[in-house]
Each structure stands twice: as structure tokens, then as C-alpha cells.
Image (cartoon, rainbow, N blue to C red; front, side, top):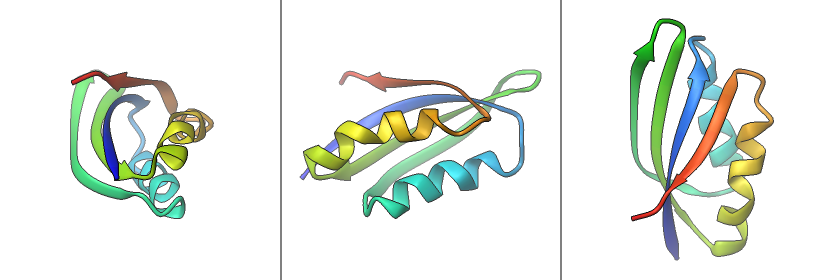
Length: 78
């Protein structure tokens, strides 16, 4: 199993966190850590570390980007 950390910028909407978590959980990936904070007015940042098999992790950023409220998804290289 490997893990990856993503920085996700989203519009300020109360349901967007649930949608992002739902995408991750539907793909049977484990959330190791999650932080949520306001970046500026109307924009929030989600930083999430996900573990799972490489094939599922490689597609997760594309799936999260499909959520309407998501502005950008970036992989954080550690």
C-alpha cells in the first residue's frame, strides 16, 4: 500500500467536504489525515492523505476534479 497527499481548493459550500470524502470512500481508499481551512473569502482548502493501492490512487485526482465545487487538485510531493 502507498499513500499520497492532495491539496484540494474548493468553493465554500457546506456539502463539498462530504462529496470529496464520498469519492474517496467509494473507491475503497483509506483517509489517513484530513485538514480543512479557509484560504480566502469563498475558497477553502482540503489537505488529505489517502492510502490504497497504486491503481486506485492514480485515478482519484481525476474523480475529485469532476466535483463541480472543486477548483483544483494538486498532488503534494513529499
